[in-house]
Length: 94
Image (cartoon, rainbow, N blue to C red):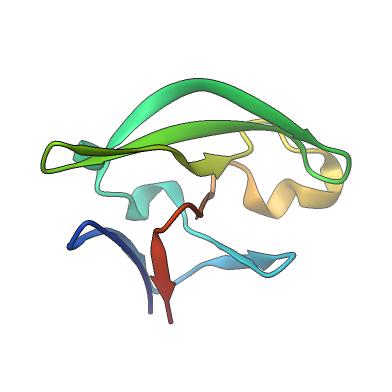
């Protein structure tokens, strides 16, 4: 099992996941949706395509653009379509 925690709360956990370039990607069904807010931020990876972001919000604190995912990944990254990875202080453990 993998889990992601921020500000003292588990924000995602799953028995299944994908690992790409050292990042653990959680299936969308594993997210605790109440902690995620869509962001307008986007970045582009030449291998995976355009990433979209979520801001994580827990108990009144926000972590801007702390989670990202690929809604329309390039074919080489199709296994992580809509899967979510974390950074910016979110702790991911196996």
